[in-house]
Image (cartoon, rainbow, N blue to C red; front, side, top):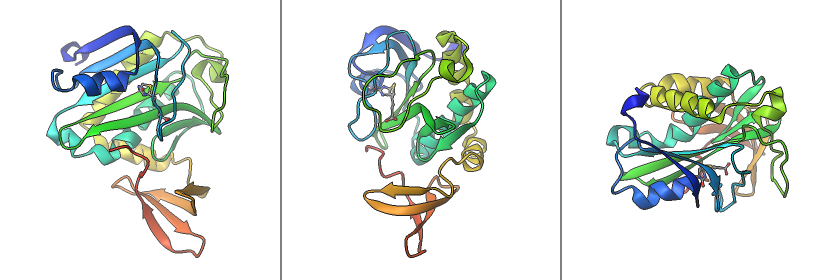
Length: 230
Ligand code: BTN
């Protein structure tokens, strides 16, 4: 299956998401781009995504097929599940999905997903997985970790990349299974979360990707992954 994909790799890019956004008109559906270093890696809410050169997986997927684009609201979660499966296959334990689009190991963040694009024209799914980096300098809102820090194994980033691409391609044809995994590995369940300054106690992830949560008065809410930039 990977043979039919267009996979581009660069040593340095500003951001793999930005590359696909700027070139979406001329690139085919399912084009994948990765790089060894980003000079301006993007995170959610205008945050930076910093990653030491050659240490981590920085990869983005371009989706132009309308059949897939209409599922954009569950892609962050399902992509996080793809990463979770790759991590578990590579000896990482206690992996869970932090709704709507992070992957955690215990209480530390190992991966972030950033969805961008123009629905219904195209979407870009950008994934950063901390693979071999062991020192994280600077200010992080959540404590970071990496595969190497968790297992003491030095990984071949190319193999991790191929495994993730395989999972993503499987997921594009089988969202439901992946969504079920997100539901059963829900990191935020029963935790107090704060969205746009309001406090909620999180419950289950729903089949449409929304998060069921209760406010301080016990009223039920269905939260959208409002942080997604569209
Ligand atoms: C987050 O947790 O805030 C999302 C981080 C997403 C980072 C990845 S790295 C590959 C792709 N290119 C980017 O500039 N960002 C995403």
